[in-house]
Image (cartoon, rainbow, N blue to C red; front, side, top):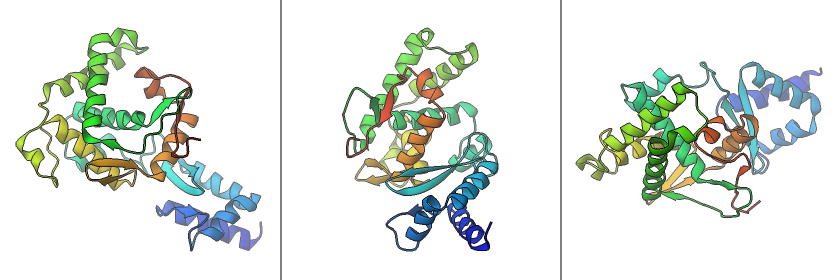
Length: 245
């Protein structure tokens, strides 16, 4: 392998690992994007290095994104990491956050037979879909294809959601997210997702970023969406882009 090829591969690898995005039409990264796809040796080396570190690379809108693979404790978050970051104490509080994340994710998915395009989600819409999903789990949990352990886990999360009031006084402060209400938990979760560059917030509306779309598409294609199916989704679900493609 030529030194120039190795050097370009390491430039791409280093940029992606530092959290930067490599885009075809972005000054400073367009050359690397072209090289990544035009040079087979560069492409193979970069993908092998990322795979060895359990890092997945996805593309959306001619931009490359990376994310830690499942179970990656070095570049991803452990449960304890997330509890510390989010200020949570109990596992079922963290699992409620996971549940909210998946409901936010699924909001932007439809069956492949449908063509509805969702550009954003409002806070009240998220509260509604989470409550609906929680009610379904409590009332019809036996209809899901769970193990006994998974059934009780989902039921515990759903019951915690139902125990919470809709809002508390702290929720009136737009800069704070309480742990004492449904609104507060959703706000806490969406604040975290914004920090991870997965959503942008504008006037109580949450817009998914290209990073979100790239990772979610990769999750459904590579991971086959196990939790999505557990929660009653269909196997032919797909993400609907703004263009409807």
